[in-house]
Image (cartoon, rainbow, N blue to C red; front, side):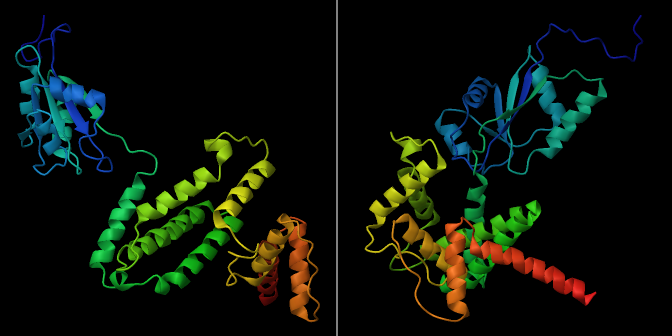
Length: 330
């Protein structure tokens, strides 16, 4: 015999209704929803949104989906869905979430004393890989508009920061520090986005981060015909030949030395020049001269021929020297 104050056993076969919490990503254009999301919206007895400015609302109304404003309490929504043989209610969640509603539903479901409709969390749109880059672009836009320092910087003024961040990235890689690598990659990425945002304001030759990304995408596709075209590459050497051939056709340079930045560190500069000469099949004698500069030149050319990065090799030796200095200091 059931005690008077115990809840009546629920009929397992009775329809219970359904509450759907529909989530969407602000990184996906409004209106681009998954097919299950559109099915839930069109089949719902009631669609609600507590955010009157939710970006999805104009597109839902255009599609004929009636959306009620407001955020009902958990008890009210449960009673609505349980009534009349079971109803379906879809709640379009805001960017902040619906914590009051979800907490209330959790309390009712956890009590064990209340009949509950089916609860479903339905993603209406998903972030694609790289979606957080859109956040970075938006944040940079706002900083450029509202920050007194960032809003007045020029590309020229940021040069030193780009160099510093690149060297810090190199250090993180050579030290094998994964946390530092994650951070330094972000700092280098910031430099790219910052420079592109400054360029967007140029009155004569503006371009945006989309132009930057589009340019490198086109270049990568063109220089990888073995991936995106009909050519084949079985080895890394095949890939290198494809790259050099397509790059030479693009640049139409008169000299293999064109495009080698002279402002880079001297060992790296020497190695790059030696690489260009070697890959072009040029047999170039080292210039005559005496002194440490010519000795370093010969060492850098020899290192490149042996497949050694002279800049990285000297950095590794310098770190050992640093450790020796610290040991001597006690």
